Length: 288
Image 1 (cartoon, rainbow, N blue to C red):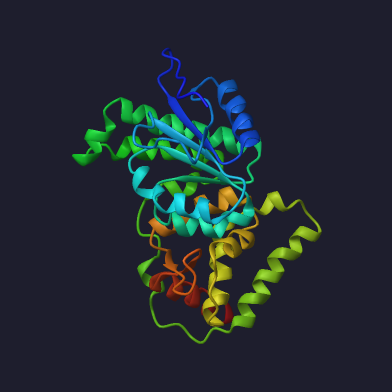
Image 2: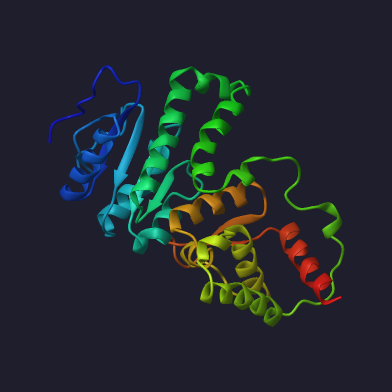
């Protein structure tokens, strides 16, 4: 295909990459329709990431050895570059393992509103870089611009509460030695929460942070490991939204990532020690 075809009147430019022509065309139509300058779709076999313009949008449709090899070198290539990757749910564990810790927005089987949200975030980050925020961040004075750009997506996904960091994520007075906590007690609370969905629209009770805390607490008590895909399912929100929550909870030292030593295509999520103690104290106090 032809090389990048950027329109000069735009201040946000996107390099579009896809592993499948139809997906590439659909993404091109969407991005063009949202008023951004976007390259013609590039195939992963020939896409040039050394000079990608201001941002990168990647559409992946299937998982194979060629894709995995390409992804393995992608994290360094995207360092400092606003990037969004769209993947099917079947690729969720593999993509999070290959890009563990990368500043990449991952969309999982997204609806149109999720794509619009991700594009808004990309625009905010790109414009911050264009305004000189890259140098400011290196000097330690550009954090406010970065937080502002992140809140575009956080607020749209009902995550604004997690972006307002007023203090430690775990209260110090919850770190006292708790009484014994039983995994069955945690499971009963999870089941009680889910029974609400038999009678009300589940969107009335969206609380993915607590749902994930409960899931990880039960798994911890049972000495089970929880991959990213399983935790996203437990969150009871779209996978893209759940991934944003996981990233934020990791940033706030509530969750931590641990690579699967047996399978490089997977990352486990577990509780940080303070969060584990806080959850044990919560359940111990509920028994009092």
